[in-house]
Image 1 (cartoon, rainbow, N blue to C red):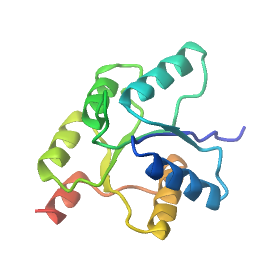
Image 2: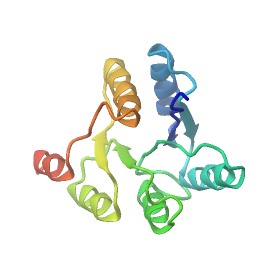
Image 3: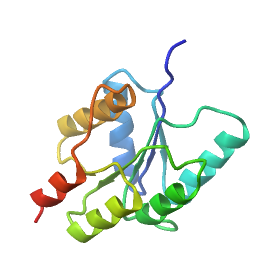
Image 4: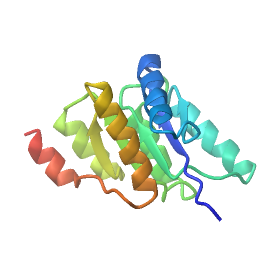
Length: 150
């Protein structure tokens, strides 16, 4: 049986969601991303998937600064609920705030990625997210990331 890869990505910026979907389309993986606009939608999606016995995402990617439920708040919820605790979470933000990075690490995020500046970097990010789900890519350790921004 083929491994189904779904990546749940939350970002309140419509343009960023569009670019990420386009990047997955460009690498011939249009069905992989599930794009939502905030943390509340992440929790709603996961609850409905669990209730319908659907396939949970292989990875959750969260922007930090979102209305209603921020990336940090969403991460906290996910790691506090046993049913979602083992889903890897990557923070994908334009923020370079080391304090936020530390908080995300403490809350259980797998890694922290700064959003790309170019379309080519978006393509690479999409491929890395997918490859991670297939266990073909690993993300940098938090300590290395934090030291790079000090």
